[in-house]
Length: 213
Image (cartoon, rainbow, N blue to C red; front, side, top):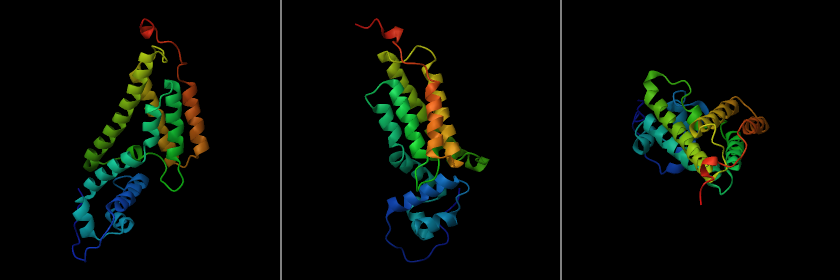
């Protein structure tokens, strides 16, 4: 765990914690956890080492706060798509096309922080890799929950399984993130999204739900 405490000294300055955290989030988003150095963080956040230490304790804690900030500010497209009062297929369409837009937004790093953060983590960063995996699993679970709702309402066929389809959709989004990190344009990501949509089962009456009164 890298210590942000040293060197000490310097007169504390007032600072905006949210702005500083946003700066750190963008660095982690662009470079990943391990490649983001303390010097890079200090420069981007505009803080002295004691200020960073007092606010965030260490690099790992700062990264975890950046993940929470990313979840709070950058994945609204997914939450909106999965909660919209539309058919399941339309919800998935909005999710994938929303990802294409979000992952290639001008002025922000390409891809998704949950994917970019620790693509190649060393053993020393295993706890960070595990936390990122937990965020990705939570996203997959949210997709599965929406698919299960659609199946119960009769607009998603019985096959394939909800879990398998959710894993496929999440895998497509993870791949889109890597493509965006490698410089794919929004148009190229939209093509990936449309291709994935074409592979989804057509909407149909859920036979298991047809007996509902």
